Image 1 (cartoon, rainbow, N blue to C red):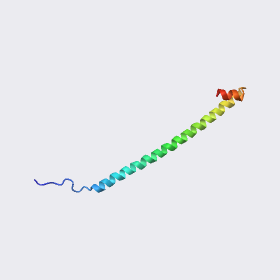
Image 2 (image 1 turned 90 degrees about the vertical axis):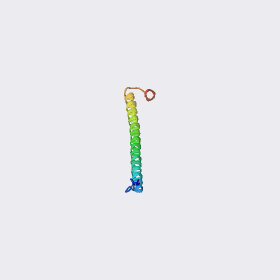
Image 3 (image 1 turned 135 degrees about the vertical axis):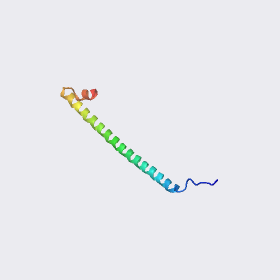
Length: 77
């Protein structure tokens, strides 16, 4: 029987190059997504800290407006 070359016309080097390029593109995308997520988390944390400070200041001034002393209000908040 004659051997038939089933793999003729397939360029393995080109296929490897395309697969590597695809993998590198995916890694770059994941890196970009991780950076975006990190920036969003930092912005969220800063926003929550700012909101917490604003609410604490508001609660302190409200407590003092009710006639309580500064020390009392600090202990209650």
